[in-house]
Length: 374
Image 1: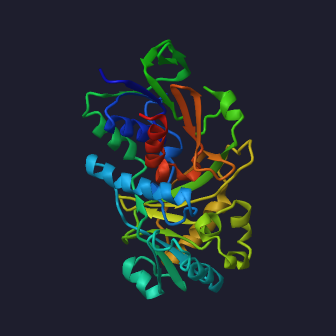
Image 2 (image 1 turned 90 degrees about the vertical axis):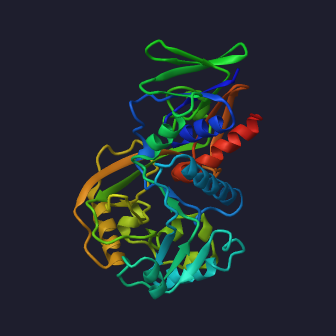
Image 3 (image 1 turned 120 degrees about the vertical axis):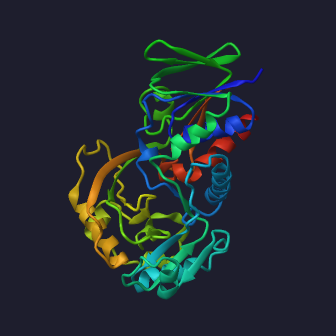
């Protein structure tokens, strides 16, 4: 008889653990407290982002995850995985120097980096009609649709008799009982299994609050928006030069010579990321807020600034903004790839990927099972 794994959390981290368990021959009962996941896993760009990852372990995990995303795209035919690559736009001489120096790093080829002139960048992505000095192309980067990616994966998993999806299951406790575990819900249900993988996202205060309070974790709030459909195809994901400050891959001496950010960008620790969705709309962001309590309201100046930068890079007006939102994710404060704690021999807690959940979660899940010897 197959061993049963109880996966708590329907976001991308929990879903990837469910997928890898199924691939290894386990039975999975997948519990989610809402009817559908509502938090950071659906409030993001859908980026599978390799190029900006920190050299060493983080980059290795990102490359492993990128390969697993490709494998998953073959399994789940409705996934809409696009290996579109990315362009990081250098609009100033100082930003271009950072890009040029980054190209000389030992792992630049591993990342799939290529320095492009403006004309070369426009040939790859004709939507980029603004003024800029160069662009860093990353062929390893890809994108999925955050609104549908989780349901697409579940639709694939549900073709297996070994997978059970249980929405509206608000888990209030996971305990080890004898040689197994039991996940208990607020409405009195109990789900027994042999192993439990708890992926709570940014909820550090419900189950296992004591363990999370002792870990080097923080929550991060971000703001984003989407537009109505843009009438030009944006063939790659796009980042502006402020992303050179944000992503650790570009830690080169010339980074310190970058001028101060725009005051709004500096205050909100901003970068521009832009992705075109399948329906033609643009998803644009983002900001970073680290100090709680977070404001419940959205702040308009940040949106105005992002629109200005996006229009400068595209060289055209954006379509009307259709939606604005905020999201909160969990992040390790010490730079570790994730927070993985073993509450017992049969219960593991996984969170803290920061803004890298979509990019790294397939490999994080694979590594969890490897560490457990499953």
